[in-house]
Image (cartoon, rainbow, N blue to C red; front, side):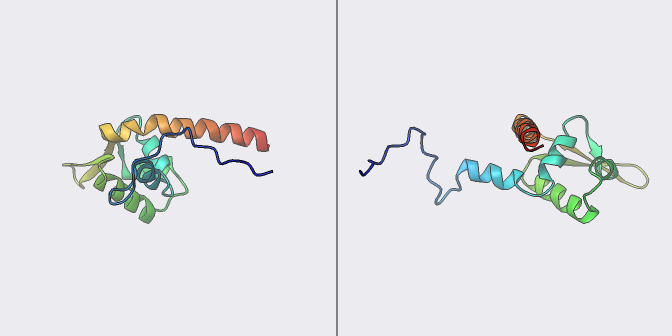
Length: 119
């Protein structure tokens, strides 16, 4: 017996070419190593580079610097230079960056459930 092909009930994502699809763009942003951790650690108050290094102890300075630069380029965080001696740089979430917090929170909740099932 051959089963007939069912139609999908899920609305299609907007066509990707020439514009990237929205889901793919968001996952490319959040899929980078350490990116969700950085966004989450900026959810409270602005943080300096050294504070983020201590918040995320396993990240290297090189990777943290690259991720912060990429997030600033995409408009997810702001980089503010404070006039001190030596100069200090603070990073903070933009409005766009704050929109990612519920997504990261939901992923974290599912991760806890998966870990509980595995353990």
